[in-house]
Amino acid sequence: QQAAELLAHELSAEDQGALVTFRGDGFEPGGVDDATLRQALDDMTDENRDDLIEKIQLLFGSGATSIGDGIQKAIDMLDDTGTNPHQAILVLTDGRSNPEPPEEAVRQAEQSRAEGTTVFAIGLGAAVAADELGRIAGAAERRFLSATGTDLTEIYRRIARQLPCPPSAFWGRR
Image: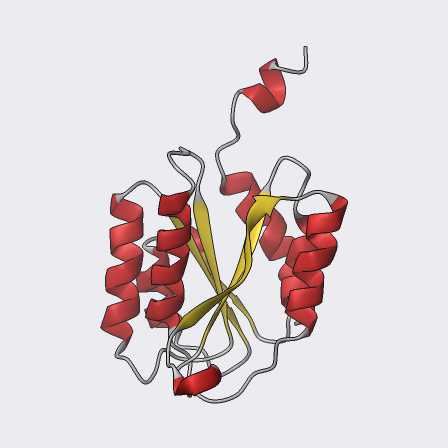
């Protein structure tokens, strides 16, 4: 939770953010094993940031980690927003992809990258599968590992430097 809240605070007013949870343990009502949109993609106004953080604070970890379902839900959400050449998915996980095989998460990430979306993967804790996260990110510079979370602020800043910035962010402010 603290890691996700930190990221929400790092988002600027020009950014958009959303929250997709992914687990495969029957957490959802009716025992559905998939990803759930907790906060829709929206501009980071103060009100939307507060809503996002409120949703983050309701999260708790348990059971399996269905990373591929989470990536697919993010792809679907980005597809619904139209064409944006600066889209990115950030996968923050404290586990390994299960019950589905890691190949499913890798396939979903490859699909997203093929459609022009940058995928970042952050493994939080000691039990992450670093090689799996590397394949999800698709490049070493987009995979990050944090054993304790103390370096997440720096990781988020490194990610922000890799994201393409729309020209309007600079040229529109002349």
